[in-house]
Amino acid sequence: MAERVDTALTAPLEALLLMATEPVGTAELAQALDVATPAVWEALEELALFYDETGRGFELRQVGEGWRLYTRAEHADLIAAWILEGQQAKLSQAALETLAVVAYLQPISRSRVSGIRGVNVDGVMRTLVTRGLVEEAGASAETGAMLFRTSALFLEKMGYTSLDDLPPIAPHLPEASLLEAELAGLAETLTAEALDPDAEEPAPDAPATTPAHHDPGAAEPAADDHEEDA
Image (cartoon, rainbow, N blue to C red):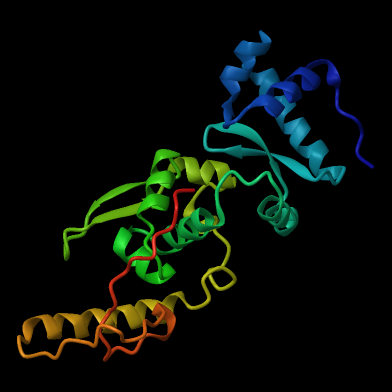
C-alpha cells in the first residue's frame, strides 16, 4: 500500500489540475501556487506515482510540456458507453463516427468521408472544424480537393501524444480498407463513363446501393441523404 503524499503542496496542486481543461505547464502551476518550479515538479511526480500505486480510476499524465488528469485506458469502453448512451454526449453519434474516419484515414477529403459513411457529411464536418477537432490539411495534389486531419486539440482531448497512440483500426472501421478499394474502383468506372459519350444512362428508378456493397459496374446514385449538424 502506497504511503499518502504530503498534502501541503499536492492538495492545492490537485485542485488546480481538476479544474484544468487542457495540459498545464509546471511553471504556470508554480506561479499560481507561488512556489518554486522544482518543488511543483517533484509534487507532480509524487502525485502521479501515488495515483498509480493506489489503483485510482484516473492518472496524472504529462502531455507535451504540460500535465493533466485523465481517466485510465482500461476504463475507456465503460466511459464511451456511458457517454454515448447517456445525456452527457457533447458530439452526436454521426459526428463521432465521422471523427473516427478522419482520425484513421487522414489526410482525407470531405467527399471520401461521405463515401465511406454513405451519407453527406458537410454539416458534421463543419461542426468538427468549428469545435477545433478537425482542421484543413491543404489541397490534394491529385484532385485539388481540400484535405482534412485531426488537430492538436483532438489529441489533447483523447489524452494522446501522437496519432500512434490510436487503438487498432479494426474495432472501429473493420471494412475501411475494403471500402477504400471499392471506392477507388468505382471512381475508375465513373471516370471511364465520363470519357465515353455513348455510355448508357442509368434508369431513374434504379435502386440505390450502399457504399459497402456497391457494384463497381453500376452508376452512382445522386446523394441527397444529408445528416444534420452535430
